[in-house]
Image (tube, rainbow, N blue to C red; front, side, top):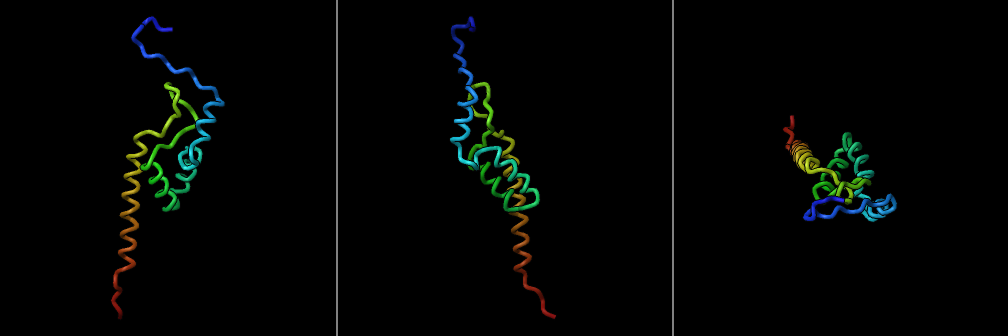
Length: 108
């Protein structure tokens, strides 16, 4: 116990059962164990990486571990920045492909 009377109380560590209970209450698309493989699939499949970017930008993705405060660990803020960059490039890439398809081809 700390000797500082003004120090905030520290949370009690969670048991593995409590961590599993919190993690299992999350929707599947907010769990790192599902989003990480979809990210790998996204390296060769554009819709998968777009889906991951949307998931990351619309909420947190959680690990099945806790941080020092006793909360489930989340993907970091850098993941959101990377998701924005990837999403912008994917949209630009798809837009240029659609524009090329819609170009009128001259007839010989």
